Length: 152
Image 1 (cartoon, one colour):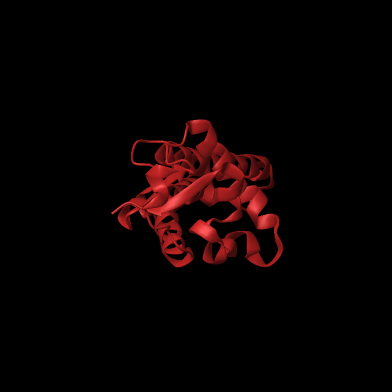
Image 2 (spheres, rainbow, N blue to C red; image 1 turned 90 degrees about the vertical axis):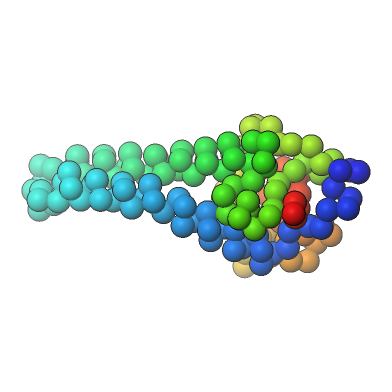
């Protein structure tokens, strides 16, 4: 833990702003997918025979967005920089509790805990924990044994 003892934790609000920045970055593939969907099927929305194709294409777009979001976060947080673009912009990085870099597997676990487990706690308490816990850890940080620290 010596590597992170002197590093101040990233608090709730700075992490929230980083999340918003990442949301803007990830909205580009979403917008491209929606435009592609409209272009490919725009003139045929009222055709009942095309309904299956439109539903299938929409399902594929949804799955692709889940995969893009997962790979973006897991690859970026397990990289040597240890941060997504939003966290980099704000001087934050994610490390293991002992200060070491995240593996891709741990980053994947943290990502899915962040989007599947933490939201199950009522009133967003799993996220709000980052404002009140020691070392400013949200539920997914505790589950993945990680810290968000200020790196600059």
